[in-house]
Image (cartoon, rainbow, N blue to C red; front, side):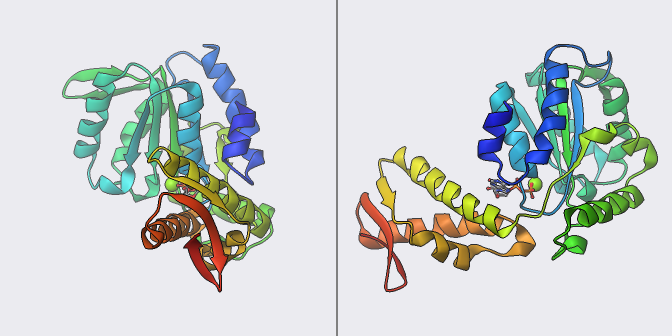
Length: 268
Ligand SMILES: Nc1ncnc2c1ncn2[C@@H]1O[C@H](COP(=O)(O)OP(=O)(O)O)[C@@H](O)[C@H]1O
Ligand SMILES: [Mg+2]
C-alpha cells in the first residue's frame, strides 16, 4: 500500500508511514471500539496532494469514497442531509471532509460526535460510522508559508494557525501523529509530477482511442507554462490537459508524437 501511495503522490513520503500504520490497525479491526476505523487531518499548502491521497487510499483499500466539499455547507442541515443519504447507501468506506475550515462552524459539533463516538444523529435516527475512515483536509496557512523553503518552519506556522482556528476539543480527538502536514512541492518534485501527469493524460486518452507518445522536450515547456507555486500542482495538471487537447484538435488526428517545434506544442 505504501509503495502504491509513493508512486502516485510524489514528494510527500513523510505522510505515508503514520497513515499506513493506522490504516493497518483499522483493517485489522484493532481500532478502539466506538471510534471510526481511523481519523486523519491533512494540512499544508493547496495543490500538494491532500485530496488526491484520500482518493488513492480509497482506491487501494477498495472502499467507497464519500467526499464532501465543506465550502458548500453554510449550515449543518444540508451537510447532515447529504451525509446521511450517503450513509444509507453504504456500510463502510472513507469519508473525505474536504477543506473543513470553509464549512460552517456549527458542523464541528457533529464532527466531535463522529470522531469520539463514531455516530451521528439526524431526524431521530442514529447512524454508525465505526466502519469508516475519516479524512479531513484543510488549507489553513497555505498563504502564510508561501516561499518558506524550510519545511520544519512551515509546518510550525501551519500548526500554530490550525491550533488557533479549530477548537481544542476537536483537535484533541485526532491523534497527534494523524495530524499530518503536507510539504510545499519542490521544483524537482514538480518536474516529476509534470512527467507523471503527461503520462497519466496519455493513458486516460487511450480509453478514448487516442494513441499518443511524447517527446521529452514538452516537459520543461509545460513546467514553464503551468507552474504556479501558489497553487501547487493543480495549475500544471490543467495546463497539460489543455495543451494536449488543443494539439489533438489542431492536428485533427488520433495518434502521433506530442512535441515542441519552434516553441509550438503540437501533435506531429
Ligand atoms: N504530491 C503530488 N503528487 C502527485 N500529484 C499531485 C501532488 N500534489 C498534487 N497533485 C495533483 O494536483 C492536483 C491537485 O491536488 P489535490 O490533492 O487536490 O490538492 P490539495 O492538497 O489542495 O487537496 C491533482 O490533480 C493531483 O493529482
Ligand atoms: Mg484538496
